[in-house]
Image (cartoon, rainbow, N blue to C red; front, side, top):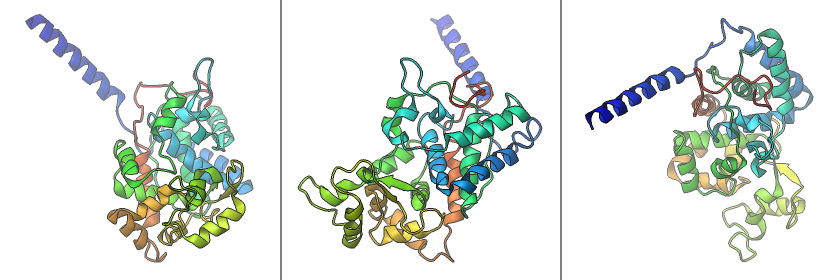
Length: 324
């Protein structure tokens, strides 16, 4: 019995040593010796695409968000399906993602500059930051050193990603399980200041809120009237602006919309059902006193550290859509 206990203790110690070796964390300037031009190359590539299609900024930001919420920030959202395994990319919430060509182009350029050094997950984190900055949003220092995961499972994306239908309790639980607090929740929701959404993501609020053919009483009725012109019952193809009139520019208008009952999703409206998140929404209405840009950068840095693979864990993919 004593021998078994000793062996168990020894195995535990070895496991802990390996964990420490593989969890060195991420840091700003991680590639300063091995690939010093990494940030310039990713930014130049991202700018090339955003200058031609500014609407790519929103899906690039969302791609990083969706990556981190499933298995951590390991680039698993970038992987293609393989025989017998449907990847995260194929899950319904991810089927509207665009901008994979930006990540692939940056990876190709980096493989020319410093082959086998920079992970796809780090490229995605940088591209998301650069895309936001390029449309007049905030910038932040991105800690680097992530490695790429080898696993990507469709069902995990369906299970772990927040949905536009979530109430506050569900959102708080989802974010909290990943180490993100209520402030991070309301701040990161501000990413809805850019981008588009399909009608089916919010149509129940207009046509069948409680299953009785009614409208959501918490949604501005005039806003619903305008949305009904674009989105008919059962429409699964039409897309609308998440932040009308400002969907291409990263700004504080999202919070103004939410405060007026014009948040597009039930998850947006949920921010007014909690005292802390409601107070934050109202505090951002004056753009000259807003803390949103600084807060967004801080929450993005925090989100970007969720479940990262470092040290000898994972791999550095040669192609972002394929395992080595």
